[in-house]
Image 1: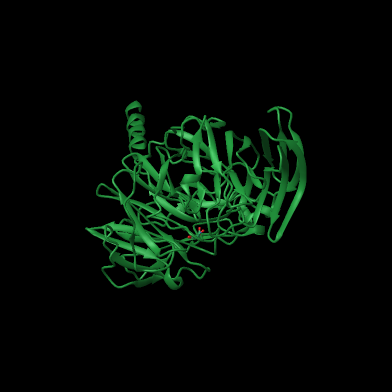
Image 2 (image 1 turned 90 degrees about the vertical axis):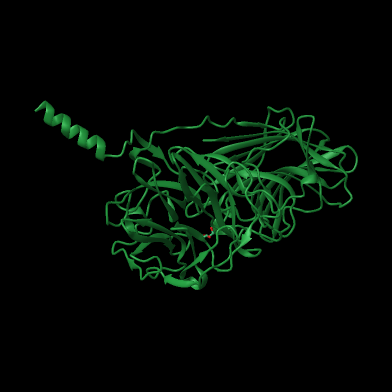
Length: 522
Ligand code: 6LW
């Protein structure tokens, strides 16, 4: 009997994946990190997301367990790789795909405000990526599939998922584009990826648009160029149905599939979290779900094609990273990977001096939709958070302004700032920019000097406070979150918290000196 139990135990141990832990929290990458794509090299996972008008472009993350992710850089770090002139919340860099083949990492994406689809490569994902090569086939959401020395590209020109072969180093298109699937009938068939399993080519796509109707469907064929037959159980992942009508997670879609070293399958995908009724502000975030994919069978996502914030499932052995310090000091002379600029920055306007971040005041305002204002920003990653900074105007001309902005787009931001007045005075001001409406909610006149600003975010309100002694904060106002939401403001992005400096005069020699930035999410 003992021997029998031992043999049974051995069979179970050998056939079941070595998943040793239970449970994790979604989203696995909170805040505006949409359109995730993932690849694996040994037991290392690499994940990229889209970045729109922000520079550097395409953040890249590393993980050992698909749950804990650490940003290791960006794929597009040089203006020669990414021209973002005139890019807005609807423009710039759309969904990227990352793949690893024969010692090389490839990242393919679309710059919708520039020349369309392009590809970069590297042997070191923590280092610099190559100069871009353009790709002729149009459509968005390009993806790569490698087999037998060939590289296939899929994207969605004219609503059809379309396939061709390319040279992945030069970008040259080697075969004619062929339409292979239009999806199951949902609008916006997009986000295609090809995988091979059990001698089937599987074609995964998104449909329904990136809002509440979003869903993931799959088809398969014995031949890479089709004909593809669709899964009778499509969609395999969606929150469009009654079972998820009250879920705090909506808009589930744009997925990529990945197999872990232990044989288990997983999917990363985007979704958003409505916070103030149907309004969401944090952008589309990166989520994770387990996939059951038996031999010759269709993949099944998390049992019933839906996901939760608390996932009670077996996981890979979890390897968390040390949590980030609340306080960013500017003593290193450089900014961490979480900080980005709007469009291609004028880097000469950003310097470090006496342990402070110095932002030069220029006449490019936050409302400018073409040029790059002097602003560094990071994502709001939690619905409940507090952000604090300390700023002083130096060598300022009257009309120079600097502070902390809660920024969704050039037409939608709440700004807390100091502004130089003639003489040795300044205002402390709270302003709301809502479309055509620019409203000064509060303005207080103070002597020149250092001011601390604090923004608190919660489900329905942002509140705005200032102090001059670093301790006693006074509230200037409280404003609804929903007017900055994606549903109100539009765009593909999420809220950024920005440190900025502008001037009414193009001749200003002034700058703003920021001492620290605290971000605390709950
Ligand atoms: C992306 C498309 C999508 O390219 O939205 O949600 C577009 N999916 O696949 C912008 O993120």
